[in-house]
Image 1 (cartoon, one colour):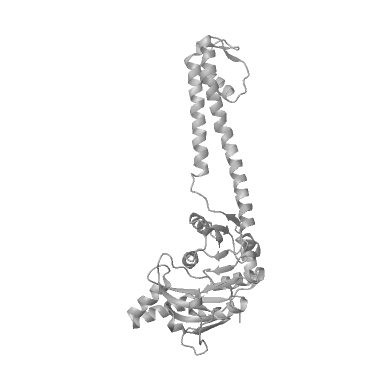
Image 2 (cartoon, rainbow, N blue to C red; image 1 turned 90 degrees about the vertical axis):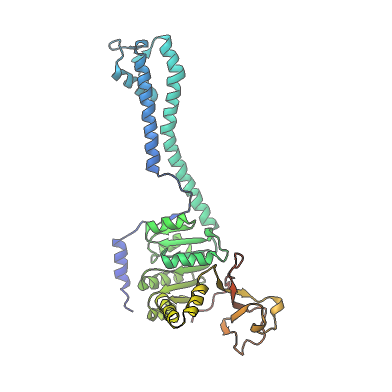
Length: 365
């Protein structure tokens, strides 16, 4: 595989620098510009109403300059009154005008101030609330899952790990596309906009405290650089990477990946199997579809199964995980099951079925 030089990639990243930021999921609200537009429109309505109220009772007001109040004077009076400037050059002199100022103009003035000042206060409050949520999120985030790339592979991976019982608050998505991060936050996941080959972007995702990292980028060379950066920041996390070409898998293993999934080869094998045996292809497709039909899960051995042969368990056992080895169900080395073993089994998917997460990452070769 031909990888571009690190210097060239660094220069390209500088040329196409994306402002990276953390975005937390939130409830859908109206666009801020639309909110401000509505408030300004309401303020304009209040101003117009005040001006016409004054103009309707123009005889009750006195203008120090010429003694009469026309339409322009009414708008001028409404402006300086609602803004609490109050120059005093136009004043209500009749009892009716003064009562109107007390019971109508003053409430309109208060409403006008609430509309304008409230917009500023809400913006400041929103910013403070976002900062508080972000700081609280950073302080509580531990042993989470970082997913690099929110394309088809990334979304499917998130759906699978969340089906095991992982909470959405424990998933952080990293993607250079702002639209992809908006889609992720709409689904309830935290997101970071930025290039995951940069260590500062991964640090914003708290990758150094992550338990597992899923890398599902569009390019294999990008996956290699992200794997190198992630492994440098977190030596203990389990890193699983998806690549297109099988020849790139050994390079990713050397870069620090615990497991490498070749998407093109896997799809090709499923296509070939479906041609040779459509029924077998349907079964395989059912197995890889999480939460429906048949599921492939990993679970610990229970006490009642200790000493038994894998075939003697209630579930259909495919493999036995013993220590750092994965043994076939018919491997003579398995013998009797041990309490520390874990079983890879095929079960009927139900709402209560969960994949038991592997707490012990397998060593890298």
